[in-house]
Length: 349
Ligand code: NAD
Image (cartoon, rainbow, N blue to C red; front, side):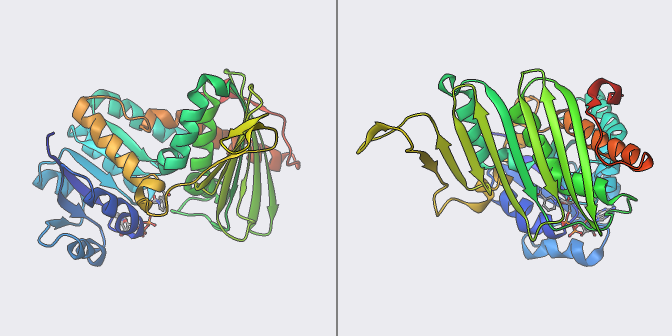
């Protein structure tokens, strides 16, 4: 297996707490340089890797050090600019979410990635979390039947003001938080997104966002998210044509309900249910998806394949984000908050 040389951009909380520890566990990855516009933050990399060359600009790092890939955890505007620079030089790019601030920029990233023929990746770690992978396997099996409905609840307490210099708290929340949940709805909904309806309810600087999605597969998804909640909690439920209901609680517990559930002591009986939990000694980075997403990104580079969570995979997610923002703006102007479903096609660029 070839060793890949990796440059890091943005040595802040997310890089130090999650991405770098996952990278350091990975075989055949050599971190070759780091960059942060803040000198003190850049220097923090030396706690983990002494003598690593550090830079204050991504362009300077890319000019000075031959790299196979860069991994970024910065504001989205930096993700966009540095990704464009790196891809133009033929360097593979993995950015934390969000990769950029709107659908137009995402389309620019996708086109640049296509031109450069590099592998792109976005840190959609929920999708790679071990319990979500378990759910995914379950929905692929014949006995599960067809996924008919996905219900997702993403409770958060922030942001309550715009992030990253944006003017909208709603867009900031969708890009910073709900992006994971919308991406899961799209992943489990399968097929093309055909309809989006949404409603935003505000109370002071907090909000509750509701969205209803429909897919060409026949599945529907219902999303409740927002910043009015006491702290972050996440849960989802899947309902199948085989009358199976699966619940995922906080990326940890899976409970499977089926018309009759078999256990060895009871045999097949009604109202028994199956439960799955990660092992107590499972690595946190594997459970939360940080190891899996990066590992699969580097495997895609090695094998010249598409990475599952690449820029293009986020197109439907950004279309949902644009639809929610557009409906909210239109609703505000018309003095009403509840809008009929937005025709998805009219939002496609
Ligand atoms: P942070 O502010 O702690 O770190 C960002 C770092 O980027 C800072 O050190 C800053 O100096 C640096 N930076 C800013 N502009 C730069 C530039 N032009 N060039 C180089 N470095 C620059 O923020 P954070 O909490 O680490 O978040 C970073 C990213 O990670 C955000 O996009 C956030 O959404 C994402 N994140 C993802 C998850 C997840 O669940 N996947 C969780 C937390 C954060």
